Length: 373
Image 1 (cartoon, rainbow, N blue to C red):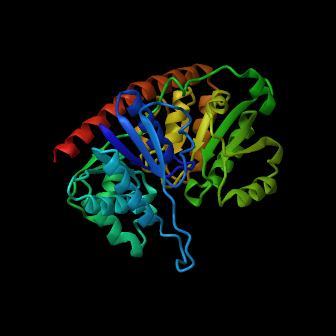
Image 2 (cartoon, helix red, strand yellow; image 1 turned 180 degrees about the horizontal axis):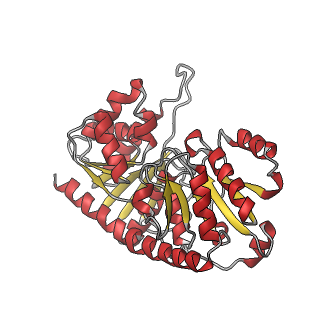
Image 3 (cartoon, rainbow, N blue to C red; image 1 turned 135 degrees about the vertical axis):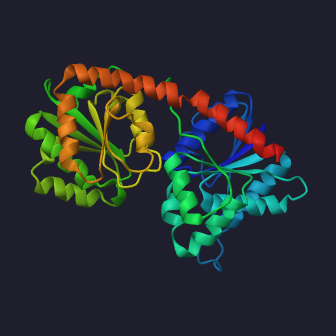
């Protein structure tokens, strides 16, 4: 197949998943055309089946804001014509599915099927806004196939928009060739002493991640277990959490590492992953942690219960219940036998249930059904 993939090129789960999906499709013999305003940061390989097309937005004084949606639609139509695309796979409903719909109308004679994957904030944040509600619903209904990255997101989409379109759940995935525990003892001694445990949190530091809960859990765990905390990421809540940590006297025990393109080594030196989110459409960080043998202590938000096997690969606690989260963390960290079993279970579950090849095959089947329509 000749497939166009439209995604955000920056850091974030949707862009990573879209890019890795496209790369694996290319390796399986499909011709893949990435279309975005910048080269996806994970598109770091050359392959004869991979093409990148940059969307150039007109900088004209008349426009108060650059008309990216229109420029993207024009580029999708242009590429679909000369590359003879069989379909376009858009990640995020707004603006990508809307632009794809416009491109489909511009190339009406060839019929360009649209597959839309919903990742979360396009539904729970952007789609919730009154000015975007109708256009989001429209873009979903007009797609030839719609997928969601979890049952939780599928159910929420159907509830919010009351749509008739069938939504197929296709989970995010893990590539075990990339995500597996590696030995980096020189890295561990940089952040923790010989008898200290390492807890890790990875996110975009937004309010929904509840960073204060992460710190509160860590502070409680530290009373019983010598440990350090790695905070990986950046975002609007960054300055506030810095102050919160300082006010609690934890500055020497917490390391802020900023955004990291590669986290395998950091996960490999970690003993536990903390995810205290109040919203989590899938929870890719949890999956990446488990693939690296790191048990996860998480909230019951969104798709996390669909990834974490309670009591086997980690623990799920009510949102905001930091005391219970800390108790479970201490239990795991002070019981080497339980930690080893959970670590092994986490690796096995992530590979068996979320292997990239298995998920890519599900997308190929979805593509086939969309083109047959």
